[in-house]
Length: 115
Length: 109
Image (cartoon, rainbow over all chains, first blue to last red; front, side, top):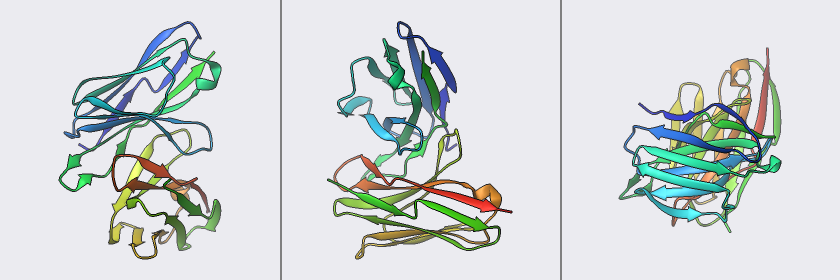
């Protein structure tokens, strides 16, 4: 199983809503990532979790709140978003081994629209 | 700051043609990912390379560590290969990926 599963696939939310994006992998990977991708641009790193601990926060606004409840799950809680936050949100995972980080596997993404 | 430069930005080919996409990277990057992204969709990892060459079906990826250059080749291209191809460098010291700007490949029947 080399799959990273993201739900929902599409999400439309108002600026006062609270919603969550979910990501799940069962490859035993201990590093998990959130990326944001705008149209025709490469993904931008938001957060990295390593062994369920937040290791990188790329100065992301606090209206995005990540959570890693266990080694298989990664959530991104959304609150009071702005229309400019509309984008494709991608989750990825990779193994952490003696030789460092291994190949990253990406999910299909959640297409988020903030209205 | 790690950098990854990819070329060409856009590539149009006829079905059956041999395709090459190039990627150059800076010091501080120890491995290269080649990724594929179809319109509206998620990213599929094609290869991760830190040396030599890898092959999977019609796809071949090579890396030259001395020259800090990698190439992705597609043999006998097909319209279903139409996608954005992205190279991404794995930093030596951590978990960040530095992404190239992507190559939009269109293969016409």
